[in-house]
Length: 453
Image (cartoon, rainbow, N blue to C red):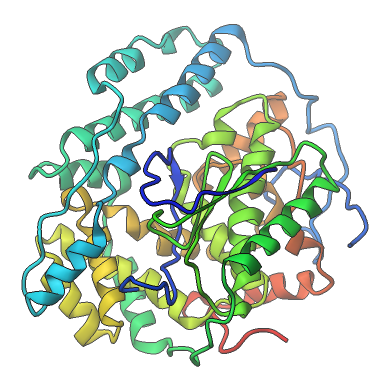
Protein backbone atom coordinates (compact mmCIF):
# COMPACT_ATOMS: atom_id res chain seq x y z
CA UNK A 1 0.00 0.00 0.00
CA UNK A 2 1.29 3.40 -0.91
CA UNK A 3 0.28 6.61 0.78
CA UNK A 4 0.28 9.34 -1.84
CA UNK A 5 -0.25 12.91 -0.69
CA UNK A 6 -1.18 14.88 -3.77
CA UNK A 7 -2.08 18.17 -2.10
CA UNK A 8 -3.36 19.59 -5.34
CA UNK A 9 -6.56 20.86 -6.83
CA UNK A 10 -8.48 19.20 -9.57
CA UNK A 11 -8.21 15.44 -9.14
CA UNK A 12 -11.15 14.67 -11.41
CA UNK A 13 -10.36 11.31 -12.92
CA UNK A 14 -11.82 9.17 -10.14
CA UNK A 15 -13.34 6.17 -11.87
CA UNK A 16 -16.44 4.38 -10.50
CA UNK A 17 -16.45 6.08 -7.14
CA UNK A 18 -18.00 4.13 -4.32
CA UNK A 19 -20.17 7.04 -3.36
CA UNK A 20 -20.34 7.88 0.30
CA UNK A 21 -22.55 9.72 2.74
CA UNK A 22 -19.91 11.92 4.26
CA UNK A 23 -19.98 15.67 3.96
CA UNK A 24 -17.05 17.78 4.98
CA UNK A 25 -16.64 18.96 8.55
CA UNK A 26 -14.97 22.31 9.21
CA UNK A 27 -13.07 22.31 5.96
CA UNK A 28 -11.27 25.64 5.69
CA UNK A 29 -12.42 27.86 2.87
CA UNK A 30 -15.56 25.91 2.00
CA UNK A 31 -19.16 26.15 2.97
CA UNK A 32 -19.19 23.03 4.56
CA UNK A 33 -3.21 -6.87 17.70
CA UNK A 34 -5.78 -9.53 17.86
CA UNK A 35 -5.07 -13.15 17.04
CA UNK A 36 -5.33 -14.16 13.43
CA UNK A 37 -8.96 -15.13 12.72
CA UNK A 38 -10.10 -17.96 10.53
CA UNK A 39 -11.70 -16.86 7.26
CA UNK A 40 -15.47 -16.92 7.04
CA UNK A 41 -16.46 -20.28 5.62
CA UNK A 42 -20.23 -20.01 5.71
CA UNK A 43 -22.13 -19.43 2.54
CA UNK A 44 -25.87 -19.43 3.04
CA UNK A 45 -28.11 -16.78 4.54
CA UNK A 46 -29.36 -18.78 7.52
CA UNK A 47 -28.89 -17.58 11.05
CA UNK A 48 -26.49 -19.24 13.43
CA UNK A 49 -25.84 -18.65 17.16
CA UNK A 50 -24.67 -15.21 18.15
CA UNK A 51 -21.02 -14.39 17.73
CA UNK A 52 -18.58 -13.98 14.90
CA UNK A 53 -20.21 -15.85 11.99
CA UNK A 54 -18.40 -19.08 11.27
CA UNK A 55 -19.48 -22.30 9.61
CA UNK A 56 -17.55 -25.41 8.66
CA UNK A 57 -17.07 -26.20 5.02
CA UNK A 58 -19.69 -28.72 3.96
CA UNK A 59 -20.78 -30.54 0.84
CA UNK A 60 -22.92 -27.57 -0.21
CA UNK A 61 -19.74 -25.64 -1.04
CA UNK A 62 -18.18 -26.95 -4.23
CA UNK A 63 -14.48 -26.23 -4.72
CA UNK A 64 -13.89 -23.09 -6.80
CA UNK A 65 -13.68 -23.58 -10.54
CA UNK A 66 -13.02 -21.32 -13.49
CA UNK A 67 -15.89 -19.86 -15.48
CA UNK A 68 -16.62 -21.48 -18.85
CA UNK A 69 -14.70 -19.79 -21.72
CA UNK A 70 -17.45 -17.58 -23.18
CA UNK A 71 -18.71 -16.54 -19.75
CA UNK A 72 -15.15 -15.68 -18.70
CA UNK A 73 -14.64 -13.47 -21.79
CA UNK A 74 -17.93 -11.63 -21.23
CA UNK A 75 -17.16 -11.24 -17.52
CA UNK A 76 -13.76 -9.68 -18.30
CA UNK A 77 -15.21 -7.39 -20.99
CA UNK A 78 -17.91 -6.10 -18.63
CA UNK A 79 -15.32 -5.41 -15.94
CA UNK A 80 -13.35 -3.25 -18.39
CA UNK A 81 -16.44 -1.43 -19.67
CA UNK A 82 -17.57 -0.83 -16.10
CA UNK A 83 -14.23 0.84 -15.45
CA UNK A 84 -14.49 3.05 -18.54
CA UNK A 85 -18.14 4.10 -18.29
CA UNK A 86 -17.61 6.52 -15.42
CA UNK A 87 -21.18 7.74 -15.41
CA UNK A 88 -21.16 8.96 -11.82
CA UNK A 89 -18.20 11.23 -12.48
CA UNK A 90 -19.99 12.59 -15.57
CA UNK A 91 -23.01 13.44 -13.38
CA UNK A 92 -21.01 15.02 -10.54
CA UNK A 93 -21.25 18.84 -10.69
CA UNK A 94 -18.04 20.84 -10.69
CA UNK A 95 -17.34 24.18 -8.97
CA UNK A 96 -19.85 23.56 -6.20
CA UNK A 97 -18.23 26.31 -4.15
CA UNK A 98 -19.00 28.81 -6.89
CA UNK A 99 -22.55 27.52 -7.17
CA UNK A 100 -23.01 27.92 -3.42
CA UNK A 101 -21.70 31.47 -3.45
CA UNK A 102 -24.08 32.43 -6.27
CA UNK A 103 -27.00 30.76 -4.49
CA UNK A 104 -26.19 32.49 -1.23
CA UNK A 105 -25.82 35.84 -2.97
CA UNK A 106 -29.32 35.47 -4.44
CA UNK A 107 -30.80 35.13 -0.97
CA UNK A 108 -31.30 31.40 -1.60
CA UNK A 109 -33.85 32.17 -4.33
CA UNK A 110 -31.95 31.21 -7.48
CA UNK A 111 -29.36 28.51 -8.17
CA UNK A 112 -27.00 28.68 -11.15
CA UNK A 113 -27.06 25.87 -13.74
CA UNK A 114 -24.98 22.87 -12.69
CA UNK A 115 -21.80 22.29 -14.67
CA UNK A 116 -20.13 18.97 -15.48
CA UNK A 117 -17.08 17.48 -17.11
CA UNK A 118 -17.29 15.32 -20.23
CA UNK A 119 -16.38 11.66 -20.23
CA UNK A 120 -13.36 10.63 -22.23
CA UNK A 121 -15.12 7.52 -23.53
CA UNK A 122 -16.97 7.45 -26.88
CA UNK A 123 -20.55 6.64 -25.86
CA UNK A 124 -21.52 5.21 -29.25
CA UNK A 125 -18.47 2.97 -29.37
CA UNK A 126 -19.12 1.77 -25.80
CA UNK A 127 -22.72 0.91 -26.72
CA UNK A 128 -21.52 -1.06 -29.74
CA UNK A 129 -19.11 -3.01 -27.55
CA UNK A 130 -21.91 -3.83 -25.13
CA UNK A 131 -24.20 -4.93 -27.95
CA UNK A 132 -21.49 -7.12 -29.45
CA UNK A 133 -21.03 -9.25 -26.32
CA UNK A 134 -21.96 -12.91 -27.03
CA UNK A 135 -24.49 -13.15 -24.20
CA UNK A 136 -26.55 -15.80 -25.99
CA UNK A 137 -23.50 -18.07 -26.14
CA UNK A 138 -22.79 -18.11 -22.41
CA UNK A 139 -22.67 -21.72 -21.32
CA UNK A 140 -24.62 -21.44 -18.05
CA UNK A 141 -28.12 -19.94 -17.68
CA UNK A 142 -27.15 -18.84 -14.16
CA UNK A 143 -24.12 -16.90 -15.40
CA UNK A 144 -25.96 -15.67 -18.47
CA UNK A 145 -28.66 -14.10 -16.34
CA UNK A 146 -26.20 -12.23 -14.10
CA UNK A 147 -23.95 -11.04 -16.94
CA UNK A 148 -26.92 -9.98 -19.09
CA UNK A 149 -28.32 -8.00 -16.15
CA UNK A 150 -24.98 -6.22 -15.76
CA UNK A 151 -24.85 -5.48 -19.49
CA UNK A 152 -28.30 -3.88 -19.33
CA UNK A 153 -27.27 -1.80 -16.33
CA UNK A 154 -24.23 -0.45 -18.19
CA UNK A 155 -26.47 0.41 -21.15
CA UNK A 156 -28.64 2.45 -18.79
CA UNK A 157 -25.56 4.18 -17.40
CA UNK A 158 -24.68 5.27 -20.93
CA UNK A 159 -28.23 6.50 -21.41
CA UNK A 160 -28.02 8.60 -18.24
CA UNK A 161 -24.93 10.36 -19.56
CA UNK A 162 -26.54 10.94 -22.96
CA UNK A 163 -29.62 12.48 -21.37
CA UNK A 164 -27.76 14.66 -18.87
CA UNK A 165 -29.47 18.03 -18.55
CA UNK A 166 -32.53 17.03 -20.61
CA UNK A 167 -36.15 16.41 -19.67
CA UNK A 168 -35.74 12.70 -20.29
CA UNK A 169 -33.09 12.28 -17.60
CA UNK A 170 -35.49 11.76 -14.69
CA UNK A 171 -37.31 8.92 -16.43
CA UNK A 172 -34.00 7.24 -17.25
CA UNK A 173 -32.95 7.56 -13.61
CA UNK A 174 -36.26 6.13 -12.40
CA UNK A 175 -35.81 3.20 -14.76
CA UNK A 176 -32.38 2.46 -13.30
CA UNK A 177 -32.70 3.29 -9.61
CA UNK A 178 -36.42 3.54 -9.00
CA UNK A 179 -38.02 6.40 -7.12
CA UNK A 180 -39.44 7.01 -3.65
CA UNK A 181 -42.41 4.86 -2.71
CA UNK A 182 -44.90 5.93 -0.07
CA UNK A 183 -43.39 3.71 2.61
CA UNK A 184 -39.87 5.03 2.12
CA UNK A 185 -41.07 8.64 2.16
CA UNK A 186 -43.05 8.01 5.35
CA UNK A 187 -39.95 6.50 6.96
CA UNK A 188 -37.85 9.51 5.93
CA UNK A 189 -40.43 11.91 7.36
CA UNK A 190 -40.56 9.91 10.60
CA UNK A 191 -36.78 10.03 11.00
CA UNK A 192 -36.60 13.76 10.34
CA UNK A 193 -39.40 14.39 12.84
CA UNK A 194 -38.23 12.09 15.63
CA UNK A 195 -34.46 11.58 15.49
CA UNK A 196 -32.73 14.29 17.53
CA UNK A 197 -29.62 16.19 16.59
CA UNK A 198 -26.59 14.88 18.40
CA UNK A 199 -24.58 16.85 20.90
CA UNK A 200 -21.99 18.95 19.05
CA UNK A 201 -18.50 17.46 19.14
CA UNK A 202 -15.26 19.30 18.54
CA UNK A 203 -13.68 18.56 15.16
CA UNK A 204 -10.39 17.61 16.80
CA UNK A 205 -9.00 15.17 14.20
CA UNK A 206 -7.27 16.20 10.98
CA UNK A 207 -5.65 14.61 7.97
CA UNK A 208 -2.61 13.17 9.77
CA UNK A 209 -4.72 11.29 12.30
CA UNK A 210 -7.09 9.99 9.63
CA UNK A 211 -4.26 8.72 7.40
CA UNK A 212 -2.58 7.11 10.41
CA UNK A 213 -5.82 5.30 11.28
CA UNK A 214 -6.32 4.13 7.69
CA UNK A 215 -2.75 2.85 7.37
CA UNK A 216 -3.03 1.02 10.70
CA UNK A 217 -6.27 -0.58 9.49
CA UNK A 218 -4.70 -1.74 6.24
CA UNK A 219 -1.72 -3.12 8.15
CA UNK A 220 -4.11 -5.13 10.36
CA UNK A 221 -5.66 -6.74 7.28
CA UNK A 222 -2.28 -7.40 5.66
CA UNK A 223 -1.34 -9.34 8.79
CA UNK A 224 -4.18 -11.70 7.94
CA UNK A 225 -3.98 -11.62 4.14
CA UNK A 226 -0.65 -10.70 2.57
CA UNK A 227 -2.25 -9.62 -0.73
CA UNK A 228 -4.67 -7.17 0.91
CA UNK A 229 -3.86 -3.69 -0.36
CA UNK A 230 -5.24 -0.26 -1.08
CA UNK A 231 -3.48 2.93 -2.06
CA UNK A 232 -4.19 5.98 0.08
CA UNK A 233 -4.52 9.25 -1.83
CA UNK A 234 -4.80 12.61 -0.10
CA UNK A 235 -6.34 15.36 -2.24
CA UNK A 236 -8.05 18.70 -1.69
CA UNK A 237 -10.77 18.53 -4.35
CA UNK A 238 -12.59 15.21 -4.21
CA UNK A 239 -16.05 16.52 -3.22
CA UNK A 240 -16.30 14.31 -0.13
CA UNK A 241 -14.50 13.64 3.12
CA UNK A 242 -13.63 10.09 2.13
CA UNK A 243 -14.41 7.70 -0.68
CA UNK A 244 -13.22 4.46 -2.25
CA UNK A 245 -12.70 4.04 -5.98
CA UNK A 246 -11.54 0.70 -7.44
CA UNK A 247 -9.91 -0.17 -4.14
CA UNK A 248 -8.14 3.18 -3.74
CA UNK A 249 -8.97 5.17 -0.61
CA UNK A 250 -9.29 8.93 -1.22
CA UNK A 251 -9.41 11.41 1.65
CA UNK A 252 -9.86 15.17 1.65
CA UNK A 253 -6.60 16.90 2.54
CA UNK A 254 -8.53 19.55 4.49
CA UNK A 255 -10.56 17.08 6.52
CA UNK A 256 -11.60 18.03 10.07
CA UNK A 257 -13.94 15.80 12.05
CA UNK A 258 -14.58 14.66 15.62
CA UNK A 259 -12.11 12.00 16.72
CA UNK A 260 -15.02 9.75 17.72
CA UNK A 261 -16.05 9.54 14.06
CA UNK A 262 -12.66 8.47 12.66
CA UNK A 263 -12.90 4.74 13.40
CA UNK A 264 -16.56 4.39 12.34
CA UNK A 265 -15.79 6.00 8.99
CA UNK A 266 -12.67 3.86 8.55
CA UNK A 267 -14.85 0.80 9.17
CA UNK A 268 -17.34 2.08 6.60
CA UNK A 269 -14.72 2.63 3.90
CA UNK A 270 -12.12 -0.07 4.57
CA UNK A 271 -14.24 -2.60 6.48
CA UNK A 272 -17.02 -2.52 3.89
CA UNK A 273 -15.98 -1.18 0.48
CA UNK A 274 -12.36 -2.38 0.43
CA UNK A 275 -13.02 -5.68 2.21
CA UNK A 276 -15.91 -6.64 -0.08
CA UNK A 277 -13.80 -5.71 -3.10
CA UNK A 278 -11.02 -7.92 -1.76
CA UNK A 279 -13.43 -10.79 -1.13
CA UNK A 280 -14.97 -10.30 -4.56
CA UNK A 281 -11.50 -10.36 -6.10
CA UNK A 282 -11.12 -13.93 -4.85
CA UNK A 283 -14.25 -15.07 -6.67
CA UNK A 284 -14.19 -16.84 -10.03
CA UNK A 285 -16.92 -14.41 -11.18
CA UNK A 286 -15.15 -11.04 -11.40
CA UNK A 287 -18.40 -9.09 -11.27
CA UNK A 288 -18.42 -9.73 -7.54
CA UNK A 289 -15.30 -7.55 -7.27
CA UNK A 290 -16.62 -4.57 -9.26
CA UNK A 291 -20.28 -5.12 -8.42
CA UNK A 292 -23.24 -7.01 -9.81
CA UNK A 293 -26.12 -4.87 -11.06
CA UNK A 294 -27.78 -2.68 -8.41
CA UNK A 295 -25.21 -3.42 -5.71
CA UNK A 296 -25.06 0.14 -4.32
CA UNK A 297 -27.93 -0.10 -1.83
CA UNK A 298 -26.54 -3.09 0.05
CA UNK A 299 -23.00 -1.68 0.00
CA UNK A 300 -24.10 1.57 1.60
CA UNK A 301 -26.37 -0.24 4.04
CA UNK A 302 -23.40 -2.36 5.11
CA UNK A 303 -21.26 0.77 5.39
CA UNK A 304 -23.70 2.48 7.75
CA UNK A 305 -24.08 -0.76 9.70
CA UNK A 306 -20.30 -0.83 10.10
CA UNK A 307 -20.37 2.64 11.63
CA UNK A 308 -22.98 1.50 14.13
CA UNK A 309 -21.03 -1.66 14.99
CA UNK A 310 -17.86 0.42 15.35
CA UNK A 311 -19.52 2.36 18.15
CA UNK A 312 -20.80 5.70 16.91
CA UNK A 313 -23.52 6.41 14.37
CA UNK A 314 -24.94 9.82 15.34
CA UNK A 315 -28.54 10.74 14.74
CA UNK A 316 -27.54 13.48 12.32
CA UNK A 317 -26.13 10.80 10.02
CA UNK A 318 -29.48 9.05 9.88
CA UNK A 319 -31.17 12.40 9.28
CA UNK A 320 -28.99 12.98 6.20
CA UNK A 321 -30.17 9.67 4.74
CA UNK A 322 -33.76 10.70 5.31
CA UNK A 323 -33.22 14.18 3.89
CA UNK A 324 -31.84 12.67 0.70
CA UNK A 325 -35.06 10.70 0.24
CA UNK A 326 -37.12 13.87 0.64
CA UNK A 327 -34.89 15.71 -1.83
CA UNK A 328 -35.17 12.94 -4.44
CA UNK A 329 -38.94 12.83 -4.07
CA UNK A 330 -39.15 16.58 -4.60
CA UNK A 331 -36.78 16.49 -7.57
CA UNK A 332 -38.90 13.84 -9.31
CA UNK A 333 -41.92 16.08 -8.72
CA UNK A 334 -40.16 18.90 -10.59
CA UNK A 335 -38.97 21.03 -7.67
CA UNK A 336 -35.67 22.86 -8.00
CA UNK A 337 -32.73 23.55 -5.71
CA UNK A 338 -34.31 26.62 -4.01
CA UNK A 339 -37.50 24.71 -3.13
CA UNK A 340 -35.67 21.60 -1.88
CA UNK A 341 -33.21 23.73 0.08
CA UNK A 342 -36.03 25.67 1.73
CA UNK A 343 -37.90 22.49 2.69
CA UNK A 344 -34.85 20.85 4.23
CA UNK A 345 -33.81 23.98 6.05
CA UNK A 346 -37.14 25.42 7.20
CA UNK A 347 -39.25 22.29 7.67
CA UNK A 348 -36.66 19.75 8.74
CA UNK A 349 -34.02 21.92 10.42
CA UNK A 350 -30.97 21.00 8.37
CA UNK A 351 -28.08 23.47 8.31
CA UNK A 352 -28.20 25.83 5.33
CA UNK A 353 -25.07 24.56 3.60
CA UNK A 354 -25.94 20.89 4.16
CA UNK A 355 -29.42 21.45 2.74
CA UNK A 356 -27.83 22.96 -0.37
CA UNK A 357 -25.45 20.02 -0.83
CA UNK A 358 -28.32 17.52 -0.57
CA UNK A 359 -30.45 19.52 -3.02
CA UNK A 360 -27.61 19.65 -5.56
CA UNK A 361 -27.09 15.90 -5.29
CA UNK A 362 -30.78 15.26 -5.97
CA UNK A 363 -30.74 17.52 -9.06
CA UNK A 364 -27.58 16.04 -10.59
CA UNK A 365 -28.02 15.48 -14.30
CA UNK A 366 -31.59 16.72 -14.09
CA UNK A 367 -32.84 14.57 -11.21
CA UNK A 368 -30.71 11.61 -10.08
CA UNK A 369 -32.82 9.31 -7.89
CA UNK A 370 -29.86 7.25 -6.71
CA UNK A 371 -29.70 9.04 -3.35
CA UNK A 372 -32.88 7.32 -2.19
CA UNK A 373 -31.13 3.93 -2.12
CA UNK A 374 -29.02 4.85 0.92
CA UNK A 375 -31.96 4.80 3.31
CA UNK A 376 -33.75 1.97 1.51
CA UNK A 377 -30.53 -0.05 1.56
CA UNK A 378 -30.15 0.36 5.31
CA UNK A 379 -33.84 -0.40 5.86
CA UNK A 380 -33.67 -3.60 3.81
CA UNK A 381 -30.44 -4.72 5.46
CA UNK A 382 -31.94 -4.27 8.94
CA UNK A 383 -35.04 -6.18 7.80
CA UNK A 384 -32.72 -9.00 6.71
CA UNK A 385 -31.05 -9.04 10.13
CA UNK A 386 -34.37 -8.78 11.97
CA UNK A 387 -35.55 -11.87 10.08
CA UNK A 388 -32.52 -13.83 11.27
CA UNK A 389 -30.36 -13.38 8.19
CA UNK A 390 -26.61 -13.71 8.59
CA UNK A 391 -24.12 -10.90 8.00
CA UNK A 392 -21.18 -12.95 6.75
CA UNK A 393 -22.64 -14.14 3.43
CA UNK A 394 -23.33 -10.53 2.44
CA UNK A 395 -19.58 -9.84 2.42
CA UNK A 396 -18.60 -12.27 -0.36
CA UNK A 397 -18.39 -9.37 -2.80
CA UNK A 398 -20.50 -6.52 -4.13
CA UNK A 399 -24.07 -7.49 -4.98
CA UNK A 400 -27.67 -6.57 -4.26
CA UNK A 401 -29.52 -8.10 -1.33
CA UNK A 402 -31.93 -9.62 -3.85
CA UNK A 403 -28.95 -11.49 -5.35
CA UNK A 404 -28.26 -13.38 -2.11
CA UNK A 405 -29.94 -16.65 -3.24
CA UNK A 406 -28.19 -16.37 -6.62
CA UNK A 407 -24.77 -15.91 -5.00
CA UNK A 408 -25.55 -18.90 -2.77
CA UNK A 409 -26.20 -20.89 -5.94
CA UNK A 410 -22.94 -19.63 -7.48
CA UNK A 411 -21.15 -20.94 -4.42
CA UNK A 412 -22.82 -24.32 -4.74
CA UNK A 413 -21.67 -24.42 -8.38
CA UNK A 414 -18.10 -23.45 -7.46
CA UNK A 415 -18.27 -20.01 -9.16
CA UNK A 416 -18.19 -18.20 -5.82
CA UNK A 417 -16.46 -18.92 -2.52
CA UNK A 418 -17.05 -17.82 1.08
CA UNK A 419 -15.54 -14.48 2.16
CA UNK A 420 -11.78 -14.61 2.53
CA UNK A 421 -11.91 -11.91 5.23
CA UNK A 422 -14.41 -10.61 7.74
CA UNK A 423 -14.23 -6.94 8.77
CA UNK A 424 -12.09 -6.05 11.73
CA UNK A 425 -15.08 -4.98 13.79
CA UNK A 426 -16.41 -8.57 13.59
CA UNK A 427 -13.47 -9.68 15.75
CA UNK A 428 -14.06 -7.19 18.59
CA UNK A 429 -15.03 -8.70 21.92
CA UNK A 430 -18.39 -6.93 21.97
CA UNK A 431 -19.34 -7.69 18.36
CA UNK A 432 -21.93 -10.39 19.13
CA UNK A 433 -23.87 -8.14 21.50
CA UNK A 434 -23.74 -5.17 19.13
CA UNK A 435 -24.93 -7.30 16.21
CA UNK A 436 -27.79 -8.61 18.32
CA UNK A 437 -28.66 -5.00 19.15
CA UNK A 438 -28.92 -4.34 15.41
CA UNK A 439 -31.31 -7.27 15.10
CA UNK A 440 -33.47 -5.84 17.88
CA UNK A 441 -33.45 -2.16 16.88
CA UNK A 442 -35.83 -0.44 14.47
CA UNK A 443 -34.35 1.88 11.89
CA UNK A 444 -35.81 5.03 13.48
CA UNK A 445 -33.83 4.19 16.62
CA UNK A 446 -30.68 3.09 14.80
CA UNK A 447 -28.29 5.73 16.09
CA UNK A 448 -26.19 6.67 19.11
CA UNK A 449 -26.66 9.70 21.28
CA UNK A 450 -22.97 9.70 22.15
CA UNK A 451 -19.84 7.74 21.25
CA UNK A 452 -19.40 4.34 22.84
CA UNK A 453 -16.83 4.46 25.62
